[in-house]
Length: 434
Ligand code: FHN
Image (cartoon, rainbow, N blue to C red; front, side, top):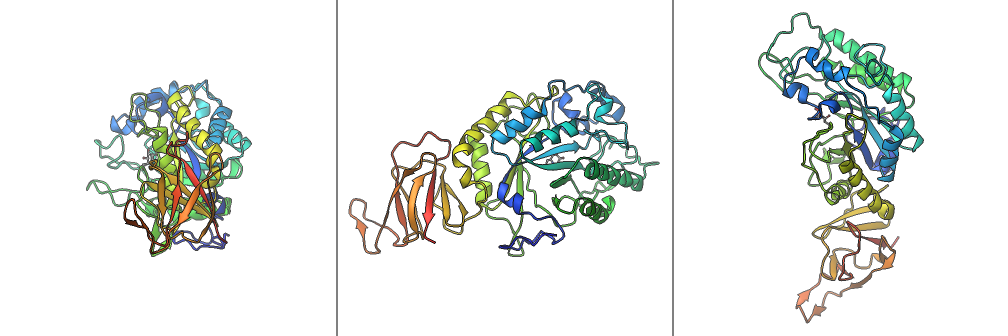
C-alpha cells in the first residue's frame, strides 16, 4: 500500500499500487528490447511487417545464439550512464520467452544458447544496484490460441477456427505468475499493449476484457505488493507511457499531476535494426531526458542488443556521452521535477526544494533573464565546475541606457562567460532563499 507520496496525490495512481517514490526520484531508466527479432535485425515487428508464419519464423529460434552476451557489461553501461532502473523484454509480440518458462517450449533454454538469459540479466543489474522492471507483451503472434486480428502476421488468413482466447489468457496469466514468483523482487511491470479501439471489421483490437486485465492486475499485486504498473492493461491507471513523443507541458489528468514516463529509442526502432541510420545524437537524447524531467516525467531510453548479445557501438557511445554529463550534473536530475518558475527561452528548469537548476540549451551572449526570481536567489554557480555566476537584480525604474531595455523588476539577470563551458548542456545551480 502506498501513501501516494506525502507531498502529492497523483490522478493515475491507485492506493493499492506500490510506493512510487523511488521511481519519481530515479527518473532515468534503460529499456532493453531483446529477442529473436535481434537475429532478424530489421525491427521487432518484422514478423508481422513481412507476414511471416511462425513455422518460417522458427529459423530465428533455431539460430538464436547471443554468445557474446555478458549481462554484467550491459548493467555497467547502464549504471555508468546514470540509469537507475532497467525494463527488459521477457516476451515480445513474437511470443518467445527469454526465460525458462514451464508453460511453453518456445523459450531461450531450447535455443542454441541454452541459458536462462533473464536470470543472468536480472542478477547483473541487481548487482549494479538498478531497480528491476519487466516488459511483458500481452500480444503473442506465436501462440496457437491467440486470436488472429489485423495486427497479426497471419491476418490475411482471417481464420480463427479453433483458437480460444480463454486458453491464451490462462497461458498469459500463468507466465506472468512464473515471472513474479521465480525471479525475485520485481519493482516495475511494463505490460504492452492494449488496442481496443482498433477495428478491421473481420476482427477487433484487444483490451482489458480480452486480457481479463482486472484479474491480471490483482494477480500481480497479490504476488508482488510493492510493484509499480504501467497503463497498458487498458484499466486507465498506472504509469502513463507516451512513446517516441515529448509532451509539451507537465502531464495532468483532471487537473492533477500524473506519474508518467516517456519511452524513446535511440534510432527509431526498439529491437536491433542493423540498417536503421536514424540515430538521435547524444545531445538530442540528453536534452530529451532533461526536457522530460522538466515536465515532471521519467525517461526510459531504449537499447536493442544485436544477435551476438552486445550493445552496438553507436548505443554505447551515446550511453557514455550521457554518463559523462550525468557524472557532473546528476543532482540536477535525480529527485528533481517540474518548476513553477517561468523558464527562459531555450532553457529548461528542474527543481528539488530550494535548488533550482537552469539547463541552458543554446548558449546566450553573456546574459540570461530569470523572471520572478528577484530577491529569491542566495547564490548561483555553474554546476559542472562550481564556478560562481554573478547575478543582478534591477529595480523597476532602472533603464539600461545602452539598450533602453526596461527589465522586469521581478527578474534577475545572470552574467555568463562568453565561451560555452565544455559540457553538452551547461547548468546553472541556483540556491533559493528558504
Ligand atoms: O509494439 C510495441 C513496440 O514493438 C515496442 O515494444 C513499444 C515500446 O514501448 N511498445 C509497442 C508499441 O507501442
